[in-house]
Length: 49
Image (cartoon, rainbow, N blue to C red; front, top):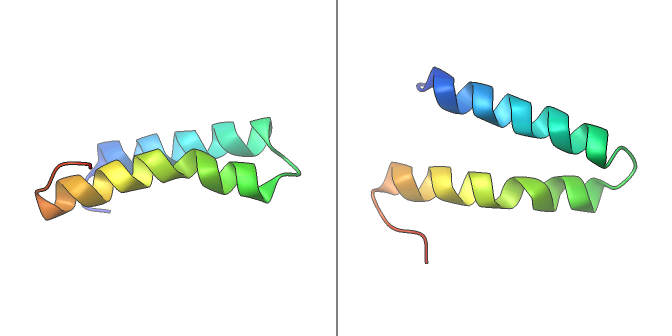
């Protein structure tokens, strides 16, 4: 929430995934994984392993 750019990027990703996978919740969730992993790693000051 503190970074408007990240918020906008996440919203856009979720819209894209919901359009691409309207009936596949697993694919929608999997599609968000990399974004979320990177954001969390950056917030913790660490690298993605």
